[in-house]
Length: 479
Image (cartoon, rainbow, N blue to C red):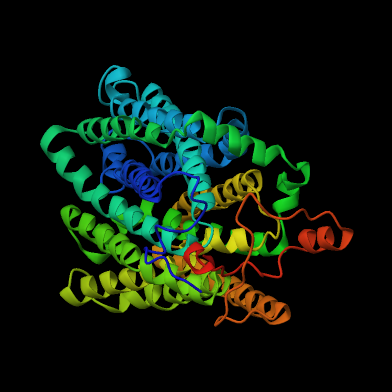
């Protein structure tokens, strides 16, 4: 075994593909800009809608609009990548996000002024948010597919790095949005963030491959029709178990984010300016745990880390973020410190649940090829966005009926129960397959798998996943 001496993160995958640093640069850029425009509305949109006389349910609709559009359009984005390529879909998605974000900020002006025609303003808000979600589906599906094929052996570490940048975007979005709104009004945060995404879209063109490389990759993919995968083929039991964990994990963000700001002000006793710092602490702990959780996933397998994280998130929400929090006096330093500490702990468990989720879903599908990777990524994005779609209306409903704390208790209990089941599934599957965390199993590079033409191998693929792809050696170890 000879080591090349290069970083394993930058030296995995096929050498004929794009430079690793370039893929990581665009991946991180997409993660940062996209998540800034998602989180920038959290601290002040509820107050803005309250000021213009709009029901808070519409705020939940705006939070759900982006993931709903992403959920619906993910299959179309996967098909578009197969027709025109990943880079054009990526660039188009970023351009659309930039334009629609700026439009969202000027919805009141386009409808005649603040509070003049709220129905027209709401229509513009909703349509621009849906368009932004469609652009997000295009950009995320494309860049995740590129990264998954470029880093087949260190995907956990790559996703960990990506989550650090996602957390940075979520962390900086609320304070940046609050500062810009206070200095330049409601539209300024969206003008700045939209322009940022629009400008970065041109960097995505750096991923455009040379014609000869494109021809070789196309010839490689069409060499065997058996390597092409539809959605039914990739929907194995293991992928579904990991996908539901993703849904619940992102559902936590969907439930907490739209109503956390009002809860912190009305029940905890914080000022509006301080709520942005709480959002930042929550996202910061999530992002800081990214590299560690990615390394754990590569070392022990992504499925047990993912499912264990979901179980931990459920317990934290049910036991600590629920009614127990009301035992402390409103406005006291102890109450505020307690809430921030619990949210930091929740951020850590959320990192364990979500960072290994794409590697967990990918490891649950035996056959691998570029087209199968695109289907897996599309499924991942649909599960991810489903949680963000379902979470806001569920959180708003609980907040208006039983209250934030009881709603979190109910949600947390359900998550803990599913996490226990999923973790048991992961451990049993690993035991049956004879997976040993101290060993790595060599697999052919993605896109160059041997044909699985025998009935026995096809049956194994359809059953989904003895998890023999949980950990693979880096390319430097195979040289």
